[in-house]
Image 1 (cartoon, rainbow, N blue to C red):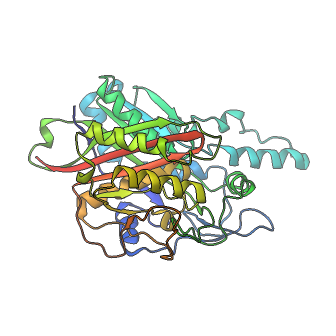
Image 2 (image 1 turned 60 degrees about the vertical axis):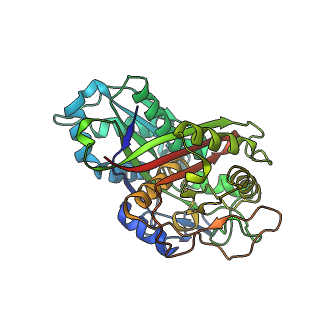
Image 3 (image 1 turned 120 degrees about the vertical axis):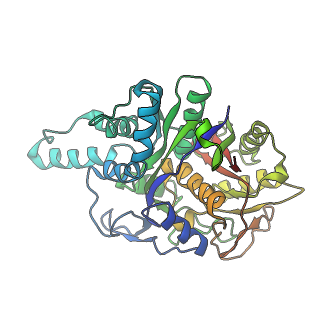
Length: 394
């Protein structure tokens, strides 16, 4: 069964929609990464959607999610009307969820004011984004009555949500699924990653010998996945061609050093798509700029693509690492590369790490138009997801 990926809705620090983000990625524009004032007496660089110094509101996750969903509203209206409310589902991924709402509530409590009347522990539920997404389209004549699913596999959550959406269509449970991810840069996120000594004091520098760690970002991206139909005939469509998932479970946060888990996910994606590795025209790398993650991903990519290294890039120096949204945002960049041509630039200092294999990094202004793209998302706990999409003329 063919599954079509309709145009995504998104926003992040590098763009308020898919066109703005893609333009920034082609140039390698890192201007969205700025100093942020979220944690008192601590300086961090991060990619915030709004003004860098703006206070973080408790409903920020909802506002960011809604801004992305609004961009796909017309297509959502169509699929709900075409297939019926019970045949449309939601799959959403997120990491931080509602921790920021809890922080605001606990500050009020410890100041002697008590918990705010509207506060509920449910605000920190893992299902916060998926439930909000379903409710966003439940107004007027719109209603979603199909499955509403939550994927919480750390930084692979957004990619995993898209895979799960495809499986709902393949299984015959749904005809269309709204799938993607959203996350914010919160005090919890910044301090959590800082405690792991994983945050760089400079914009992240993926695959460089000088890499120091991640730069955090926030954003949201959502697709509508739809079963293929005669209406797509005679037009150019982007298909979800294959995916692979693995769980190497090597360590709570560190990936398996030899890249075997990542390699298994990529190989399964290639096999499911029915292609050879040489057919992949571009890879959006997970590329967090942490020593272990970049090392194992380079080993995995070099192993699978030993005979023909496609252009690759990590776009996290442009967007920041958007956690549960990363897989969806980065797949949206692949969607744009297939639709418009051009490859997102790899931003780094050019200093190769001799301890890891050399990859074929795409520079700014690369005009190639791939026919097949791969997007990698490799997360804590050894949760690995690789997705392949392709552009086809009907």
